[in-house]
Length: 421
Image (tube, rainbow, N blue to C red; front, side, top):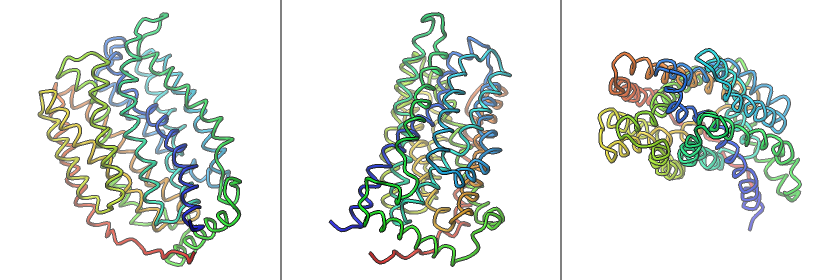
């Protein structure tokens, strides 16, 4: 086996499973509120409007603190910064047990978003320090399957925790936030000992493997910088970066505008128990996990996933039977989630250095505005119309617009030749 094969194989085996695990925990703490809604409506009198705004306000905190947090990670290092983020967000997530009304709900969700702001873009940046582009698309795809896995595992887990309603005086939704917040705190301390900043810091690599990875990444960085300016202001002033942010805005608006309300929608249309809703809600994301891996290996345009997501969202809007509802949610999940590895291969292909830190964080920040707009719109529209049909039809429509915007991206990315091995 060549040095190249050994180095990439070892780095993938060491880093990706751990990053996958911590992102599963992160995403579960972000979206578990969708299952808590099954009881918050009765226990605290939350309307869909209150829930939609509270679910989405997470993204406002994410937007405000995204770029500063990622720049801080680039300065202070991924190991310490990611660990700090995890410990803080775990504490905030567990503190959701103290929600008493809309105000405390909004404040804690905002703080959770602010705490987690640099986590995902920080990991994307961290991967550029270890893998050149030709390997990064695959590794990012493997890492991003954590999004679907969080739903697969989180559905039954969250549904089961809700069944603890009344145990030792706590409501089911309080058990959900408490139990699912603790792993983030524990894994934060593990991160401090487990992650290595750069290949040169990894004693689990042979010296020649360290040298190879460091040379590959540095060679690619130099080639990217030769293609144009790579300062922070270059990234913030790039039309391509802002267009990517707009595409991501639409994807997240549709994704969160749909998925935050899936448990409530399923229970309304099927009458299933909390646990049964959790199990059924997990099924579509099992298919989405497979689709993400396949799409990452085959590559291609974002147009197809956007169209599949639009069709699935439209079917979900009108479906009444459990079978057709599952088909619609599955198509939506497959389309929206399989777009992620294809999408995040784009900015890492032309940004480097501090521009990469700022550009990736800016795209994530603009996109996460959609994470606020989507749920808030769905919640308000459902309260106004008494049905999820109208907001889901609108979300399907904006995904069609997204497929047109993708054509403007001119996805012929700069070619970064491989260094000689």
